[in-house]
Amino acid sequence: MQGLVQKNISDRIFDTCLYVVMTIVLIVTLYPFLNVLAISLNDSMDTVKGGLTIWPRQFTLKNYETIFKFEGLVIGFRNSVIRTVLGAIIGVLTASMVAYTLSRREFQARRLFSVLFALTLYFSGGLIPGYLLIRNLGLIGTFWVYIIPSILGVFNVFVIRSYIDGLPNALQESAKIDGANDFTIFWRIILPLCQPVLATIALFVAVGHWNSWFDTYLYNAQKPQNTTLQYELIKVLQSTQSATDYRFNSNNQQSMAAVSPDSIKMAITMVVTTPILLVYPFLQKYFVKGITLGAVKS
Amino acid sequence: MESLTTEITRPAEGKKRKHRFWYTMLQQRYLYLMSVPFVIWLIIFSYVPIWGWLVAFQNYKPGKSIFDQKWIGLKSFIELFSDERFYHVLRNTLAMSVMGLIVGFTVPIIFALLLNELRGRWFKRSIQTISYLPHFVSWVVVAGLITKMLSVDGGAVNQLLMSLHLIDKPIQFMAKGEWFWGIVTISDMWKETGWSSIIYIAAMAGIDPEQYEAATVDGAGRFRRMWHITLPGIRPTFMVLFILSIGNLISIGFEKQFLLGNPLVSDYSEVIDLYALNYGIGLSRYSYGTAIGIFNSVISIILVFTANGIYKRVTKETII
Image (cartoon, rainbow over all chains, first blue to last red; front, side):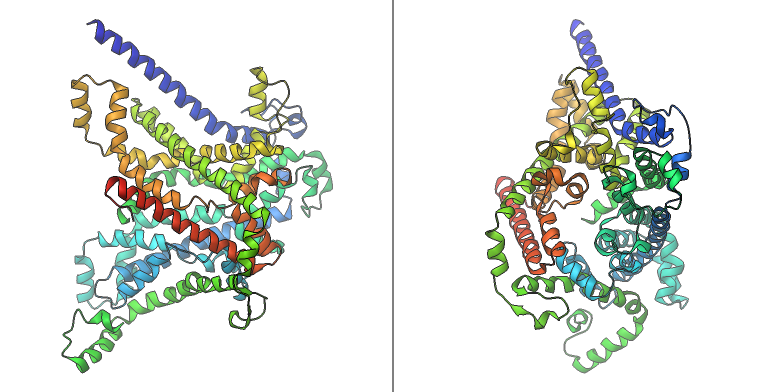
């Protein structure tokens, strides 16, 4: 009897510690985001006084109004949206199309193509040869450098293929008897059936495009019209002394002076982060499924 | 191509077989149309750069084709191995990757273990959902958040340490080289712990509940059940991931170092890939940069096979 009581007590202590630790994890994860949000929504003169935590003291939208007057940022936002949407659509269509051909058992080139695709998962040419290739293709300084080199993800091809392999074959067979060609089968039957896996992959590809900055840095640093949001954020964050170091091409010098660099940095950070937060519930729903699919494949 | 069709046709029917091959190809024209453009794309973007490795043995000058370059043999490699800076960046790379490896495996496993012990379902799910979030945010944003949290004026970390009276004046975290490795490791931990724990949580869910029941009947407490059932249950998952990441010890990328570093800490922040980037593209020394890349790949391959060999000897199983 006494032993049981003791066990209950130690159990309860353990549970309490567990909840405390997890609450700390929660705070550590969320605090930086909330802090940045609070600063971005706070009057910038007031922010300079310090002491802001997770709630704005003097609420204002002026910081956001100011940053949307910066031409570079607006162009970057537009480019990021375009590459994200275009990249995700192209990425899903191409990967599923290739996956479908590789799933057809009677396809002559199936084995050869599968091996060609699979090998690239294990090696890559590396940074410099990749750069030289892009240069020789004349893609430097163009918007297409964001799209063409990442037209399809090889890993995604295999994830989708394993999904197609799991679909019932009867539909395909009956369509073939009705005289449908392979493309029609893909477009009318396979694509609609693959919706769950395609949603997962579209979201992952989109997040990858939205978050990528290195291609802008490497290939489009000299082309302001091809800049992306992440790259603009890097430029702002790395101008340590003041935001005026960062050439905003702003015509509105007055509004610049009234807003402190810190507030600008935080407002831009929020603009870059918010789309991720918006799609996060959907990502959440799908990605565990995505991971399991990947695991099945390997 | 021909060999692919031999399974479905008999070798004796030579002429007929050839005829049938073209016939099938015509039949499957849509499949070819749907895949060949991407195979060409793949060859250009994934296989042609492998040819680019030849650049390391040439005195590469832009504007000429790779076949018209002057061959210089191993000169780039000799230059690389006699550069003192190279050993310096190698030290930085290994230090950060070993720290990352240790933290990147222990913390997510501990997190998964704790999460597994959590009873409130709603609380558990919320914690999980929130812990994955930083994974999807870009490194650019994370670097910004970390810099903000560690800043001297009003950074949360300095404020916390000050209010606990652990320090008298704010520490300049981002300006001191000796903090850099730790900052990179902790940023990585903050961003990826939740995400990395998913796979362990999935492995833990696959453990037979009867094992726990039997252990409880035998009088095993919570810690003993975690030690003797949960941890052995995730061992195969752990081993696969561990060996794969041994292969990546040297190629840790440069994103974090690029974004968190600044000129003040470059003695600690420059890693191999950044070194290759600075020399190879920054100074247009393409051959030298490619030589660094080749060194990277060769070491990775050696590491992963060594790790796999050791694992094989110990457990009589193999990962690759």
